[in-house]
Image (cartoon, rainbow, N blue to C red; front, side):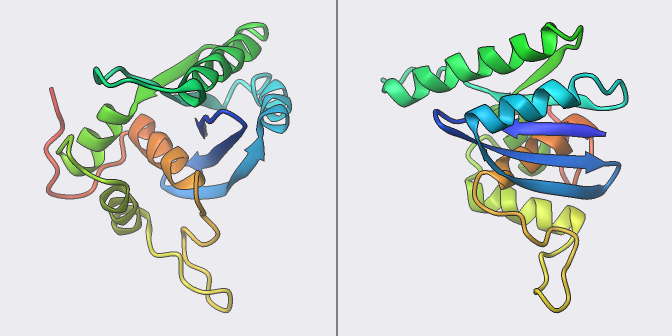
Length: 157
């Protein structure tokens, strides 16, 4: 199982993936996410992956720096429990799912739907039903860490 997190300055998207099956996803406030991590980091069968900030040479604001601090808090929370966190950049996710660093969020979302299945409806929920907002990037991190890849995508070396 993989718990993947898309960190933010005040809230985090998350997704729990088992094989090719999305078990749960959602968005939590930072303190709730850290509390959830405390429990997850004690489970040896669950890997933890967090999207990592990368520099692209552009100026950034306070939200990016706060997100960096929060990533550190997540890594520390797991380290205190003897667990490592796999850090995954957005660049790696784009290359893995789309084969192109210019891919946009909509391209990544579509690649996830192509790979795992459509959301469906409330009456007939699909495999990605209920994934919203920041949970999509978290799911993309989980799929990247799991090595699941859409057909026709050439993995970057």
